[in-house]
Image 1 (spheres, rainbow, N blue to C red):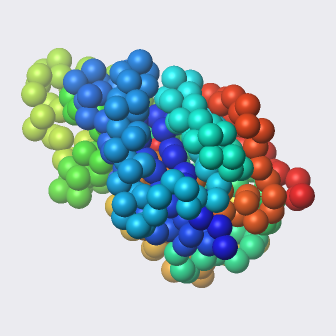
Image 2: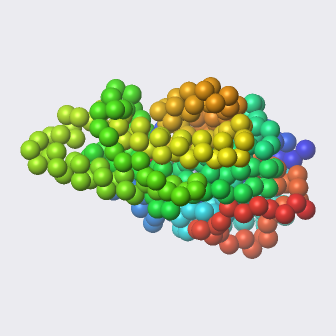
Image 3: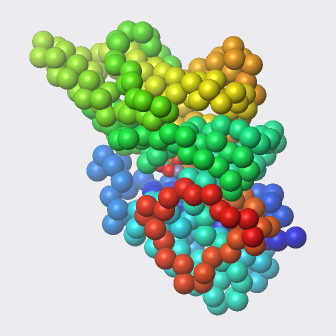
Length: 339
Ligand code: KG4
Ligand code: ZN
């Protein structure tokens, strides 16, 4: 029996969670609103907002689980990838608690946690399975043989899928983060209204920067004779952009699944909250006979529940971190040798 307190502060969400024997008992997220007016995450403001939100968020999960700090068996934190300042706030805080209470420390890779969020609730995928992780900073196609034994088959060579959503939204004049707004307006539009190019990358890699440029040039051309074009065609533009991003993602996912003969498929990360992606994936899965795993909405975008789940699996395997842990903004996703 292990009680783990986990903190996630890699970008612009401050989150804490409690896992009791691998079961998530509390998971709270404080989303930073301060960035909307700047059109993107401002790292210095993010660090300061984490400092303000961390103690109340941690106290809230302790209260919800009916626990005190003295009852925590191990402390877990996101060690990267992410923004250095943001990571430093979370890691310093958790290191302080672990050290002062003389309890072990668990360092979690954020991208690994997005994938392992699938083990929080049933149905949990059996191994091996293929996971498409689509977030604001990463797009990775990963073959999982076990929790900590996997292979990255492909990834983006430029923008991440979430960035493609957010940058497209910005071109349409929508505030940050634009992904959820594109999703909202796309539901009212025609996905075939405008055709944007689908990048052709070798293997299982992805590319989204060409799409952003194509949208920019298309809008500039239309706005020459209709300055209000992006406003009057917002729904159709969002639907067409979303359709293109979903096609790019599903094309590679399907190719990998066929090549490897894998029929257990999962998606993870913030963009897996996208309704167009979820719907298209469900259709593809039933056509292909896939067993499909889509996380609950609360575990798609950044949350400490997934950090607590991953930390629990590390705890069981004795995969502890050094008390002097230094976060790494570019922490690579690497298999962990079994202890
Ligand atoms: O995983 P996440 O919360 O943070 C990172 O690790 O980056 O992902 C955030 C990304 C943002 O780019 C956001 O716009 C996108 O996920 N996102 C969405 C939706 N919800 C979040 N993109 C499209 N449709 C959504 N419903
Ligand atoms: Zn994330």
